[in-house]
Length: 121
Image: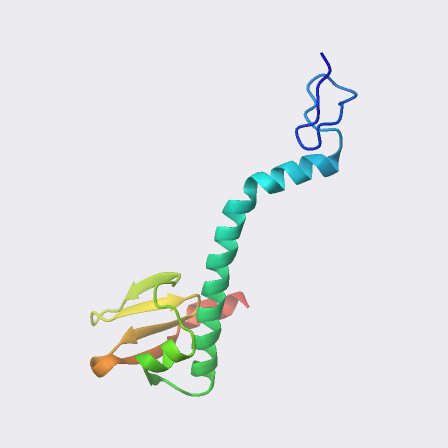
């Protein structure tokens, strides 16, 4: 019985344990299998990069306190962040890579840059 390529269906020549007729078919097949997972990761990473860019732009413009609505207006998504650090005084900072924020009274946000991450640039 002649084996057929898992991607294109062409007959396979060579070793008996081959599954694909070429490297291109092997790549096509594996890329198709991983497409859904890769799209999810790509979308989440895109949201994290966008959040980081918004925080970095505001911080670098000298804005340390900003209203939460201003972040919403810029497209910031509060559901996506990389980590949370709780300070010694009990404040919780939500970070998106090296830029973070903590919520203050009256829906204001205090921005912060974690200098620990500056060494990796």
